[in-house]
Length: 76
Image (cartoon, rainbow, N blue to C red):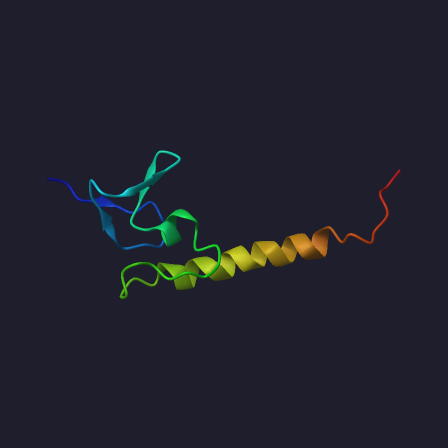
């Protein structure tokens, strides 16, 4: 039997028949399925995928905040 890996990019966990499916991909836990949106750790204590996923997401949030300030007028 072949072991399948979690679809979270930095996750080292394997998944089985009881896996969480989202958008046709298998994840080991809800935190991985949500992309560690709120900094949740992976269900496996020794997996550090939540620590590496969070900074990238916050960089995107910061870039959006700096790129589209609400106080700027719309260009004609």
